[in-house]
Length: 299
View 1 (cartoon, rainbow, N blue to C red):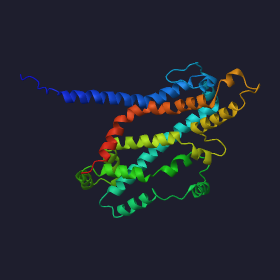
View 2: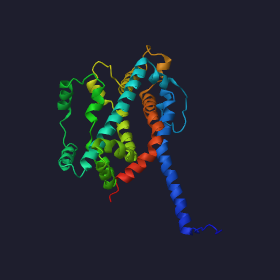
View 3: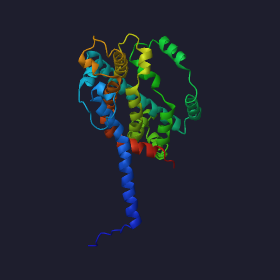
View 4: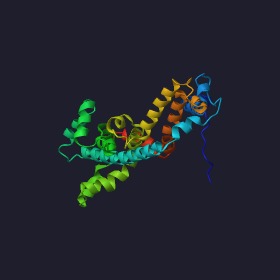
């Protein structure tokens, strides 16, 4: 039995590994520290936090900021709306973008170049805010959940990503399926989607984060407050905290409310909004990396 073959590392290689490890450690600190700092501020007393000097650990620990942010039934209802729009918007957006990318990548489709150019134009020119709002009003989508995900079904950017990925799949696979009598819908559902899971997961991260963090469209289209999501509710809480900061000296405020400041409320809101993304992202990370890498490769 032959012995395993080892390559002796040179001194220059060892130096490179050490420098690379030190660089990556410093880079990790730069990336992680801001979130740790925000977390520490969110657990600190508001009046004490405005003095500064809080870095890795709260100086005066308190849960008043989270009690203020997480109280009330409206927050639960807003969380449900955020989850609904994120799930529905992500699933429909991924499927429609993948379908559009498959259509414009089919070589036997005569209008694929025209359709590709038509969608690319929308990346540079838009109708504007007022025409879009008037269109949503005419369609009767105001004060509905549909207005959050229907306008974003198709995206030119995601179309380019999916089309680039699908073009790397051998055409012989699709031709063999057509010879066997498979329809385009069957090819898309049974071949394109399973083979494009890394790219679809990558797009799902983009769409999901965008849907979760969106609040401006809620401010426009949710007039009666029925479909207010978590972000718009937290935004209004931040405005209320800012208003209370101007009343710090008022006798009407309790001692508990005096300890709340916009700085600490902003930090607590940031933690509440970012935590679900941090929990979900590790499950999609491998698809995110491979999807972006393979989607950019051209044969």
